[in-house]
Length: 188
Image (cartoon, rainbow, N blue to C red):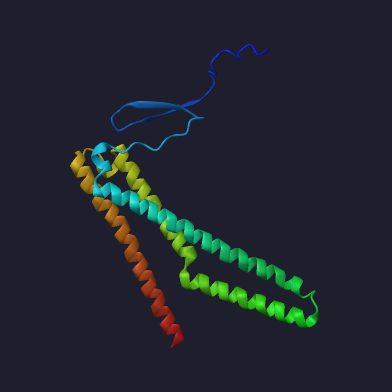
């Protein structure tokens, strides 16, 4: 029989957060920290909708690009590893199998280069994380949102979200334009 079975566990570490209204919220390590609640004045505002929409879009696109990049690379590496094993096939079949594997590796790399899955994965992830950072600064009334009234906080949020999104769009446009110029020069 355990002497302490009826007593509360006093060794559980507790953590706390301080909400924007100054209230301290305690939670244990076992409890999941829940997403902070959105203030009522912000929840129906277009700036908040845009922020959430863009976080979800960039997060989703980052995951999609990561998935495509990894699938292509795993397939390429698998085919490359199988080429030596293909040499064990009958000679005529080995020639064709190794040739086809080499062709497929080149095609998969061309697809990756044309669609830039690795670059988009990282770029979209960085933008999603910047937008999340903005969200938590807003909810914490910290950084550029400190000492601002509610309407001014929403205006600042709208401006900063659009700044992040338009910066990412401008970088994408410039990178795409630069790649097209390089391809034309190399093709000439």
